[in-house]
Image (cartoon, rainbow, N blue to C red):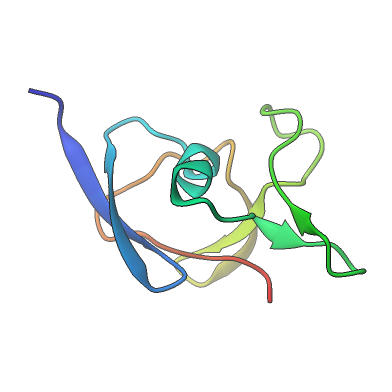
Length: 81
């Protein structure tokens, strides 16, 4: 059986398989990672930490790259508002 972790995205709990990146979890949740300065929703582009489009706050630390962070039990992910 595949192990899973429980985390929250903008306050909503979700269950994802162990080893899932935060950017992938955001896509599963149907959430944009952040909003551009003009308010446009943004998501991962490069998937390897070069474009910075997947920036989210993880456990209160802003500007973390979602494509480089693996989901952990109890993780709290917040998008820009």
